[in-house]
Image (cartoon, rainbow, N blue to C red):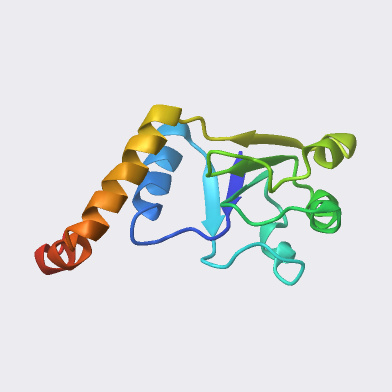
Length: 129
């Protein structure tokens, strides 16, 4: 299988894509740009695309479908940004990442506490990111 990653963050996501590509034997390509009608041709020759949370409306779904894309995977909890009914109607399948609602809530609280405690500055100083 060949997967094209849109909006791939090289500083944290790319190492996992490389690891999983080797582990599960798939080919990949990527760009840091979000998918749009202007860059849909980057996915030509691929079976699937992986996106973040950008809107996938019928026009862009048609463009990807015309390039041979059969699967859309979103690297986000929700999938309300993808017109699922339309994707299915043209033969595309879509998937999203499943997270525990509790872990998302815990993460949100942790971010609020970090903001209150000036943690971004501390993390930058420690070069943790």
